Length: 168
Image: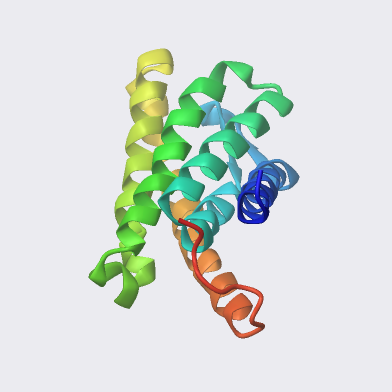
């Protein structure tokens, strides 16, 4: 493994760990919807911003699924891996477009919609449409906050010269 590969591995590993921690540290149960509100989306979006679509997929999928397992929801881990992984990928992809480069928060919107759609469908299958639809406002708040917070963190990091360009 060369130096650049090692740096990339460390960056991905850090974002996986941060995603899991952000998901777990502030995890507010929402009993009426069989889910929980968390700050993981912030790091999923930040991973997409800093590490591009591949890093967004890896950190979003693995970090979020790991949090599900560690929080006692292992049943959700495979679904979370796909939903959050694709959320990170879609965010990273959108941010690479000319629109995404100019309007980074708006470019995260399709990824947020995907996350809401993905969890709504899975929840509807297992718990029914009433619970699935009741969860949508919580998902919207979580994703909206995550998009704004991730952009603010990236702007702060860019002023420190810690962040240069996304890893491809």
